[in-house]
Length: 91
Image (cartoon, rainbow, N blue to C red):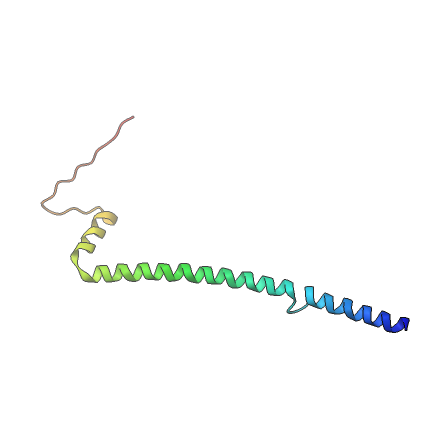
């Protein structure tokens, strides 16, 4: 009878160890869930970035206003009939 109880206790300990620390155990499942959540977040950020880039491409295809705006902001360009004023602030 004592041998049967010892075998049952060893079996329970073994199964508990596999449940908590073994391959496919709770710790591994939690790690996989965290990794999955991180990947979902990254995918959402990339999806939002792609949507913004797609909207910008559509805007650039539509007309010259977007091209004009981009040339002014990023390249500092001005039109021929405009005058450029630079204000220097002194302290």
